[in-house]
Structure formats: C-alpha cells, structure tokens
Image (cartoon, rainbow, N blue to C red; front, side):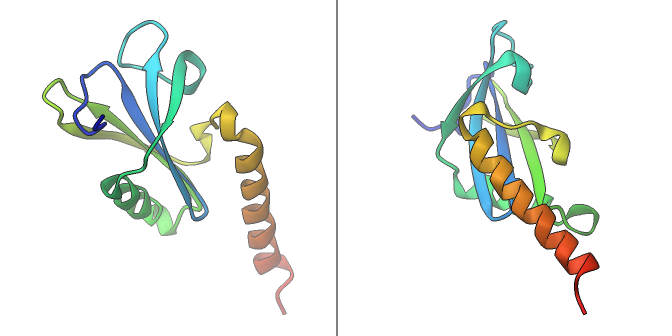
Length: 119
C-alpha cells in the first residue's frame, strides 16, 4: 500500500525526536479525518523520503527544534497537505513512549550540559 495515495479518511504525523524520524497513520475513532493523539488509532508506517525532508526542514524553524512533528492531511485525490508543525506539545505514541522519553531526556541533558556546564 502506498500511503501517499490517501483516501482522506486519515492523516499522518511525522515525528522527529533528535535524529529519529517516525511516521504514524492516524485514524480517528469517530471515522473523521480530524484526529489527535488521544482520539486516534495510530499505526507506525514506513517513513518515505519526502516525510523525512519535511521533518528535517521543520526542525530548522525558530532557530532549531530538536523535537517536532509535521501533521499532514491527505485529500481524496491523494494530494498531501501539511496542516501544521508542532513542537514539544506533539504527544507521544504509546508504542514508542518509553523509547521516545529516553531520547527526550538525553536531548534535554545534553542541552543543559552545553548551556550550564561548558567551560
């Protein structure tokens, strides 16, 4: 299945935490395309090159983001539209929550070390 040919029944969330990029297909439990992490079923899908590019470009916003997500809605004709870029308020997929929290801790500690402990 090619997820780029969307039916409009779901959206995508491209998540970047540090160097890790994942893509999730989000299907609303109500059947609506409009979903969010708390009311959607998430499926980890392959991250296509264009999704990686979008996440990398989004992470350069505002002087650089170590954590961000790009939300994408898919039209009936398969066209993908970037709806928004989120920072740390993105929420985590329960399947990867422990791993993602560990990576977030590492990012925060490295930034604190750089800011407060460098000579």
